Amino acid sequence: MSKNLTDVQDVFLGKINHICNKFGLNNIMAQLYALSYLSKAPLSLDEMSERLKISKASVSINIRALERYGVVRKVWVKGSRKDYYEAEMDITKVIMESFKSMAERRLLEIDDILKSSYDVLDSVDLKNGKEEGVKVLKERLDKLKNFYTQAQVLFNLYNSGVLNKLLGGGLIKKKFNKGAEK
Image 1 (cartoon, rainbow, N blue to C red):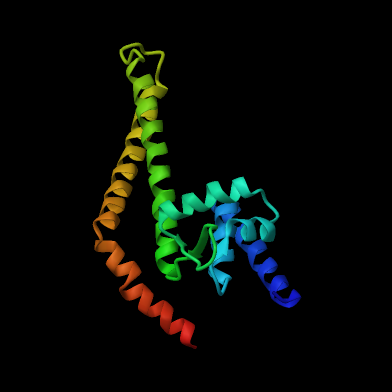
Image 2 (cartoon, rainbow, N blue to C red):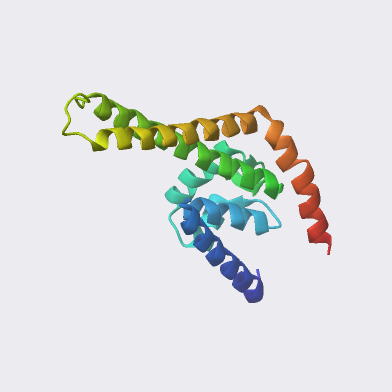
């Protein structure tokens, strides 16, 4: 690979790191996906490790996670016994799967917060006049629970495929492709 191409990839990988930090995503997984996406041929674990200057064990763990998410796949390379991987080239699918995974984790966290908070709230003696803030706290928890319920409905709609058709293969994709043609 030429020095110029390596420099372009380095800039791209650096920007990917920056974006991932803002979204709280795993930098290594993003870099591995980006590296695979930009590569013209499947890459071995050794090649990825050497290129990103990270351990082969870290590459192995993270590439398998990417494989479970369906954004990279193991491929056979004639004449080699090593494992090679290539990226899913449908970037819309990759981004939507990332958002889906992130949303699922956040919804589980909110559910846990709500359950824990309601458990503590239920243990407070509401008849005791000293706990005036309890009513306000309950009202705010109820608002958060309402938001959580709405978010869960949207998430379930996405998982059912209704939103996926709109976002992944429908209107948004068509607009995105029109913008890319210009």
